Length: 175
Length: 75
Picture 1 (cartoon, rainbow over the protein chains, first blue to last red):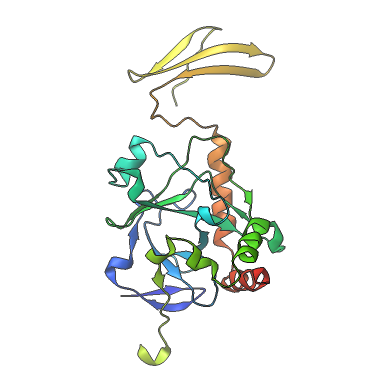
Picture 2: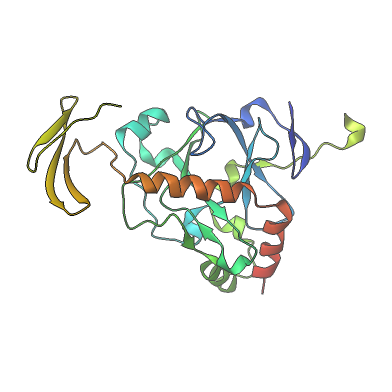
């Protein structure tokens, strides 16, 4: 299948690349189908792209890249909604906001996108933990990560990005 | 919306397992005590509003922005 995106043009997907969000995301309740895209042009982010609204896509990062101790406790209802039986099968992604000054970029640790990879289901889970920030500053922490391990692309320092689909842009001639 | 009047110390029961009690009334502020099963999520509404706003702002990040951040982070 081919979806339209405002950022990456026409993107070719397999049916199994599509993640279903039964309740959408907060503020985007009508959008239920997303795909995680791995943009080969940057070494850090993946994109959570709506299959239904071309202009809607969120840059996402794995929280362990900037919060190594990150621990999310899911409730029974979260687990049920994701058809998960054990928490360890889930993958976590934090939605990132990048303002004009990128050094002020933040990630949402309070409400990660939790993905049940096997069932291709996902949910933005609002965690009860009050110590987790909705806008956690991350620029310096990411920078430290790069400094500590300059030879390895940040994407390859984490485990979850492999669930993202390589961005395959359809050229006009292929349509 | 159901609207109920409660005095200090009085409670409201929701379903069989959730109890909300008026613990303190001070000027324009009301302190509520909430008893609920461990699995029940309880948040101030502002939390959801803030997450919605964060999602909205994140959705407007252009693709070249992440690429430029990636380059910026490289030593």
